Length: 208
Image 1 (cartoon, one colour):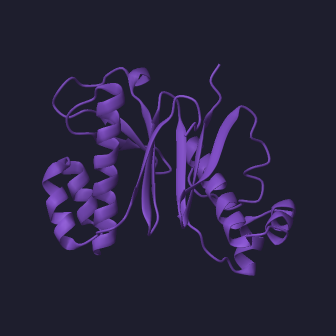
Image 2 (cartoon, one colour; image 1 turned 180 degrees about the horizontal axis):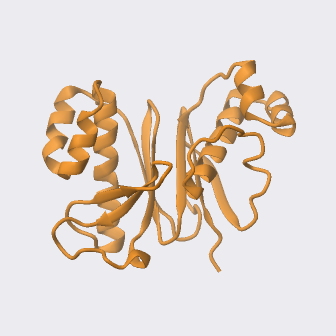
C-alpha cells in the first residue's frame, strides 16, 4: 500500500494482552520502557506500551540499522523522541535520528517512522454522541458526518486525521479541535481502513 512517501509503518492487531504476554515481553525492552509499562495497573496498558516499543525497535532495525535499546526524551507536551540507542553508538547527531509516532486502540497498535516529523493515529470505529461531534468537529465536518453513508466510520476517520496532524506537530490533543484540518498546506495525509473495525491516519510533511 502506497502511504505517505518514505514512511515506514507497522500495524498489528491486539489478540493477546494477557499478563503472560506482558511477562514475556518485559525482558525484551529497555529499563526505561519497562518502568513506563509497569506504571499501568492493567494488562492492556502494559501490553500496549511494551508491544509498541518492540514494533518500533523492529522498524528502526530494519530500515535504519539501529540496534540495541531505545531511550526516549519528551517535549513539553509529552511527545517522545529518540535520545540514543542503548550503550552502543550514541546518536549524538540530533539531525540523524529518525522520527517516530505510536498509537493504539483496543483493537490494534500502529507505529510509523520517517526522516522528518510524523504523526500516526489508529482508532476503533465507534458511534459518537451528538455532543462529542459538536465539540470536536466544525460545521462542515458535522455536515460531512451527517450525510455520510457510514457516519460512524466518517467520524472516526476525521478524528484520526485530527490526532495524526496534532501528533505530527507534537502538541497532542488541544482544547479547540474544530479547525485542526483547516490549514493542511504542505502536509501529506493518508487515511485508510487498517482492519475490519479500525481506521488509521498517517501524517507527515510533503517531501521535495
